Image (cartoon, rainbow, N blue to C red; front, top):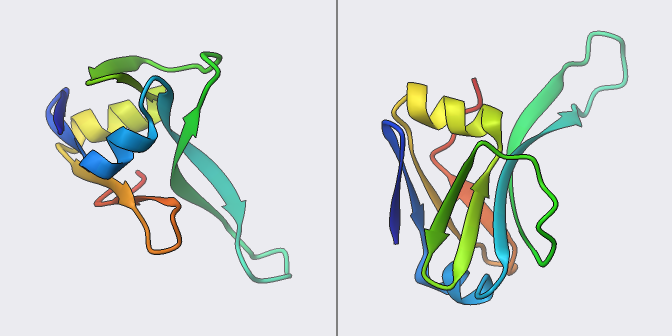
Length: 105
């Protein structure tokens, strides 16, 4: 399924939509500490997709996708819109959700 998010697009695999049926698919950004141990180490920003039963989240964009709701965090929605990005959400080899095509700005 393809959702229009401003000037960008969010493509969600049908298998992910089946997993998120009657639930919330939440897309957000998260900071992670890098692998080095010195003070020069920088944090990395990564995109995270998760499925939740709870409707407690802070978002700026909410989309209906079949029987599930897609909620996108404000910073992530702004990047998708301004950069005209097309991101794809699919199930990875280990069963976790994977976001492809997103470059945090």
